[in-house]
Image (cartoon, rainbow, N blue to C red; front, side, top):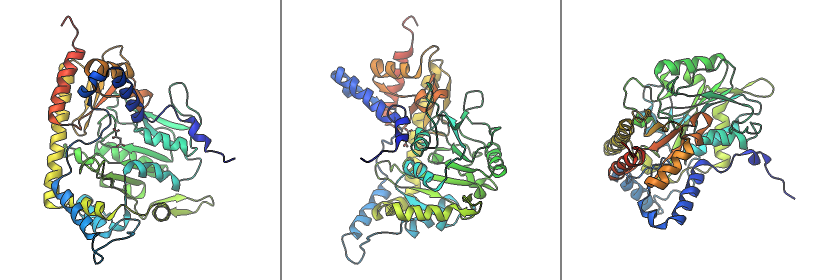
Length: 414
Ligand code: MLT
């Protein structure tokens, strides 16, 4: 009899977004006449079409596959040189990152989960609360935690509460951590870290020989010129940080799939015998063994994001989504709710009306307004009492959501 990885049995319920999908399905089955009215502001999935420059490049990539002379079979596992170079020139100019420190993949969700393959057991893992659930669940699957308590917090993880008091940016812990997950602009709270805050994290990581896993999937949404887009803008970060980036939210690739991870060559971890081992080499070995590269047409399409036309089109997409975020922020503020995020990120993080839990708010919005939001508690116990609205939508839908929020949340006597 084959045994299983029993760590999976420690996982709480379903992954957040399938659970939301299950509740929405149950609702539409019970109220089929309402199904067509539902507006989804739950999962942060882009809604606007792929930029034409990206589509044209992808078509060209597909056509090349139709000719023996230009056909591409297996590509380099780490990604094509043309894309890695375009990334470095356009995203990391002057930051000292070289093209061979970039690994192309099919998604940051996969990369942030798979990265645990190269780390050992017994690391103290620091995780913000609330947090993108993938970081927690993949550590549970990898056996890096004990069981969860009644609030869903796993034994063995070092939780760093992010609250309105600290602006949803975790303070460096007093304890020693080995692996630290940071996500800025933050999913789910939309918070951003200042240069000084990131400097404190890099200092902490270097003092503790820790590695920062820096998820910058939403960097393109930063509007404030003072906010760093990359951890490598901070001196010393190349000695202690891995950065994850994605084409999903800027180029609209959620259905196309392309992302990349930066692992500086000087980054090391400790082997059992105490020697320092290159994390770049380990990830390269892992990537070559478990991955055959993102598809050629997709990488050609991703490179088009950096063409002159592509940059303009991506900028228009960001302007569109950030315009949505502004409307959603204003609608919630008008209702007297405490509103965070949405200024440098496509997520608006809102305190539920007094006395309402996150899931109660989710149910209210679904049943009374036919709007799907994400309950803050789904991102961790510190998210209880909040909900997240995704700004990824058409303008028409966002205007409608603002109206429905007003109707659902304005007291009858008002
Ligand atoms: C989210 O809604 O939190 C994101 O879409 C999840 C993801 O990017 O995987």
